Amino acid sequence: MLQKSNLIRVRLQADGARRAGMTPLLLGPEAEVRAVYETTYRYFTGGAFLVIVLMVVLAALAASLWFTQLDNLPTAPTAPTFPSVQRDSLYAFAALAAGFFALRLGDRLIESSPIPWPAWGVFTAFVLSASLISFYALLIVIAKLQARPWAQLYLRWVPALMVLAILVNGLALWASWPSLQLVWYSLLWLLGLGWVLVYVRLSWLHADTIIRLMTAAMLLNVIVTGHDLWQFRVNPVLNDASLAVLGSAAYVLAMFYIVITRFRTASAQARDLRNTLEQRVHAREQELAQSYEKLELLSREQAKSEERTRILRDMHDGVGAHISAAIRQVEFEQVDIGLVSNASEGSVRLAAQAKRAELLQTLRDSLDQLKLSIDAMHLQAGDITGLLANLRYRLEPRLKSSGITLQWAVELLHEQPQFDHAALRQLQFMLFEAFSNVLQHSGATHLRLVASQHAGRMVIALQDNGKGFDTAQPSRGLASMRERARAIGAMLNIRSTAGATEVEISWTTGHNQSA
Image (cartoon, rainbow, N blue to C red):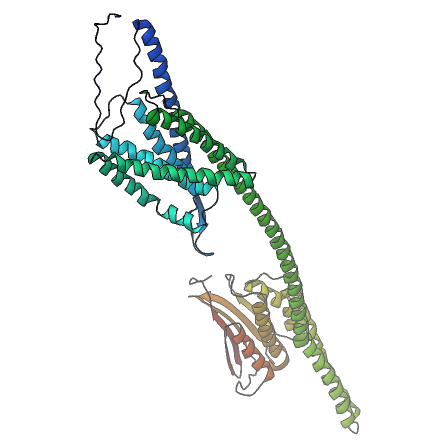
């Protein structure tokens, strides 16, 4: 092997615009040469493989965070809730930058390109350009410069720049114009150098850990890039001892820290927001509970006030009216006695007894009315049967003492949900007025109460065999009964002849079958 006549011939072939070269030749025993080769190969591919794995994990993590950022927000206060997208662009650009650069480093692990040249060269050049374009957009978001006009312009033109990267690199490789590709990469590296200066300034002005971490990674890559440019462009020794893997590892670690820190910050903010909302909701619930308690208290007070008003009105209209009538009767009795003072003593006595009988009747009506008003307080809403039973219990003894036989023809009646306590009192006043007229004015000896329910209609009728009266004659009692009937949506029919008078109260019910 050491003879001068030995000839070692190495044939190199390079495609247009394709970087090509070889490592220094090493001659020696196979075991020693292979050991050096395997060490160099592990460094060349092992480090790249580790960085690629980290890049893929980072890209997947950032992409999943970006895609899952959905908030269920209502479009209007009364509208249904729909998913509303609220995504952080930092995750998107981190996923793009890491994913594209993982593809670019993957070229180190491929011995032969899967597609012919120059198509493979266009692909690798594009993913490198796309990773840098995405990375610069990520730097804008990290530095929170999105509001600047030039930053908005750059972010808006990111897709167009990636399309331009395909066109430039495709033209350079297919037309064998390496100078065009050199200009393109020079512009990208100058832009990167500008970002290095921006971040150095931000790190000097602001004590932000994320900014300083990214600045350190960028400065390390400036050193790595300088070394690689020296090795590939200046140093005459053909070599591929690139330190790009070291610079890539620094970037990926910095980006991992930024993504995780951003996620933790967003999660903490979400928790704080949720806790704040829960506290506000709890406070609002307490306020509403207190408001409901106040409203309930006011409602109870209003109900008590309305009940007091009703009792006073019933006392005024019922008992008060009868007591007023009794007072007038006493006053008229004194006047009448004065007018008949010249008459015989027997006539005066008879007149006084008649007036006392009328007064007694009025006072009894007043007492019965008071008792019935008290009974009505204990009735359930819609209980017509209970109302009629109270009337019978209170008035049948008076009917008997007046020589009037009561015939009770009341069927089992359905409850009337539309009859609340107020409607029951109106019906009670009407029936009591009818009973009172029979007791005071009819001269009847027989009274029949009929109550039935059939074909969706309820009918209550009082029939007596008294002397009758003229239904067309104006009467305060009858006018009051008609007004109360209209108030509860009932019909009042009065038919009267000598020996047969009927007062009928009827209304439509919700039941279509007889009781």
